[in-house]
Image (cartoon, rainbow, N blue to C red):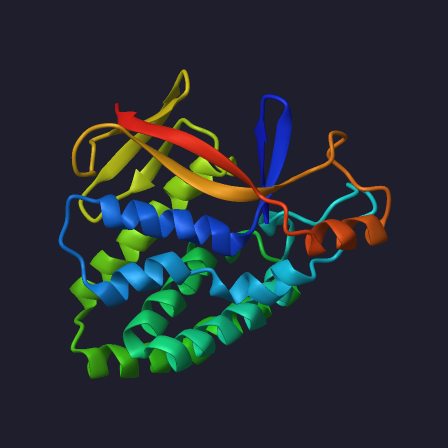
Length: 242
């Protein structure tokens, strides 16, 4: 879960809803991409579905934790289960990209600051997934360069979607398969240079749950009632060449 703060409201955005935006962005790239890759980009956070249905309540903040407040001890098993779901639903190509995305996050952001328990969880995930990824890559006929290319594209739209959802604040540098893209904020627009998308500026949209005006819940029971509610609100972000 992540929280997007706007004038007059705060929206809670689930990890799968953020991945949906990633998928929209991936389809807008000025590239011809395979359907399994597009599917994996849109579903890369399916590991979080069960967590989003029943997140823990943090009495200190009065809300569910953001995804950055959940440690690898909790989410490494979730990632493993997410990969299994991808494999069962869509086959080895989608499962491979989802698995590699989890590994990329752990290698880049998880190991450096992990405590002993979190490090064991990360290392266990990486060790268990490595032979399976090799098997799936061989089955799909994907070489190392192609896999790195596809994984980098998913990581790029993932990071850009985080900015759209309010979980990454510009300026920032985002990895592309060749070089980096510079992300900045100018007025109501997120700007990228170089511009990797088809055509000019566009508006992307998603959905989130509106939080109480105070930004917190009185207790866990109130948060559970909020989670059970079907209410959603649309948010929009404009992306433009930098």
